[in-house]
Image (cartoon, rainbow over all chains, first blue to last red; front, side):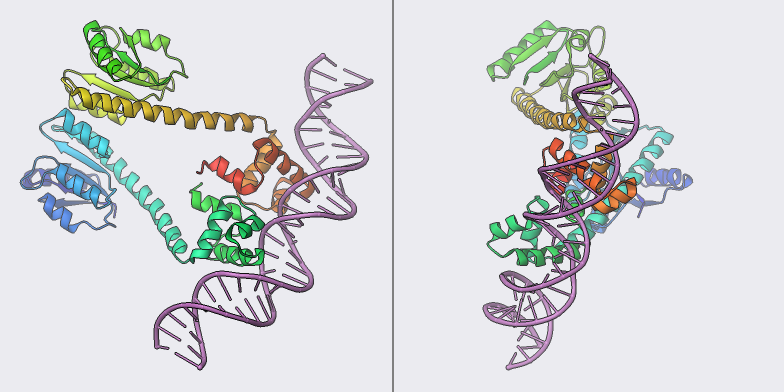
Length: 198
Length: 198
DNA sequence: GCGGACTCTGCGGATATCCACAATAGCCGC
DNA sequence: GCGGCTATTGTGGATATCCGCAGAGTCCGC
């Protein structure tokens, strides 16, 4: 889960980086090509990506683009020997976490990777919560959904009844179903849940 | 307000950029040094900053750092003739909006500046709303504040009364004062206001 | 000292919300 | 057709919230 994925077509570099990180107790998996990693990647793949730019076949940048297109949000640190400002600027603006030129400082790189791994772990935790929320939302019927939206908008039951053209009693029923399905007790809790408050 | 500030010690470049942007109806102010802009800058200075890296005296990077330290959140686009990856990476990671190497494409630069100006305008609008909110929050007494926090946390009046060791009636009084001062009618609206929901 | 805040409390009533019990009706799948 | 899900509504009562009226104590500045 909290693994560092190293994608580099140079076996010597993979090995060297592998040793470096394993010596710091960072779990590492090496990939000999962008294609190999892309194929193995799954939406639930966690950790952090250390990506060489220049490789045989698919470049690191293209891999990054494809991963983004697939919804990957793993932190990516680019590693490159031939610095190029526009490329670096572009990668960072697309959301890469870092862009490091070789030769690099071992300790610095390890620190950044560890920070990235921690960031990813936190992010995944947040998303797990969101997923549970989405699952609960999915159990709502359309009507319940409508009522919920109005409740969260701060409307009173009578107003909701009016806007939906149904009786207050019916609104109450839907409302209580929403509370039950969303596992909250008050409208405020529901609002916090949906607006993602602390 | 929605002005482009160009900081460059080369008068020829300032003039050229000035012409370019004025021809696109972008209001421009030129500054001959980082020091000059830093002195003129105020927290309510709006717009966008086009910043040369290498200058006599204070460099663009140092100006950026000082502005950040003073809480400036204006979008900053760096302009540089001598690309250097670590510098670019660093600037972007600190929050610079862009990092452009000379020679640049006129149209592209204008587009980016216009986007940055729009972003700044939106950001300022949001912050203006936040300021109004902060002003209203400031009118609350400590007790009202405590009650509000618990209301927004989803607690019922009776629970709040219990936690604060006061009667329910008193909680009701504070609660209604909070609603009045914050200009809302329901706990849900208050929650949305404080958690910054749509 | 007196007026003005902030805090605290009680009473009673108008509203609003929560909920169990009960019932009708359409739609869908087995 | 029967059972299950959804949507609808009603009655009636328990809780909770909203609010006006009334009073009381503290602290602070003029």
